[in-house]
Length: 204
Image 1 (cartoon, rainbow, N blue to C red):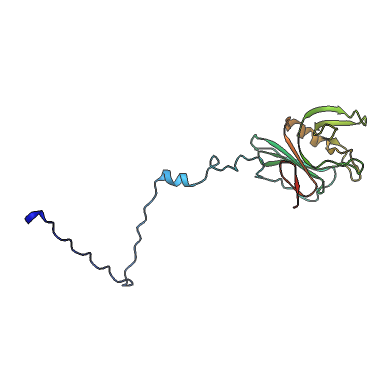
Image 2: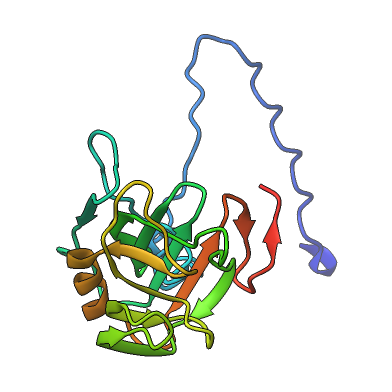
């Protein structure tokens, strides 16, 4: 063409009118398989997946949970941090490993002259055959929580019994817990209120 001119482009054809009895086809571009997989969260991508404070399972308890009762089931539960929770108001203790409840028991706890403390405590000592030097009383499978003698240990868990601030659990349960617990594992004791891991009680 003269002067190297380009032909004028023809205007695009007008779009057909809608609703003319023809199906409307929508083109969908399928994402690559790798992209689809990336969109699905994985345990590695989920910051809560390995959080020991995230509850992943609670044990099923049939019927009333009475003094002297306990349950234990750690079959198939992965290894992981142990966290023990105690609710003084509910009079129960629960054991969680990697977020899975593996044990629960009805407890006895501190009498009015020495109440059980509320807060978050690390286990600082283990002694399977401990005897209290204050009360000359056996404390089998003792897990010490405080410097003034408060601990979790095997007890005769009956209605009306109490302790001098300790958390008493059935002795067979205490033996199972003792085998799992390590120094530094956290014990969170509440009185029916919410408690953060720093130990500050908050209203529920």
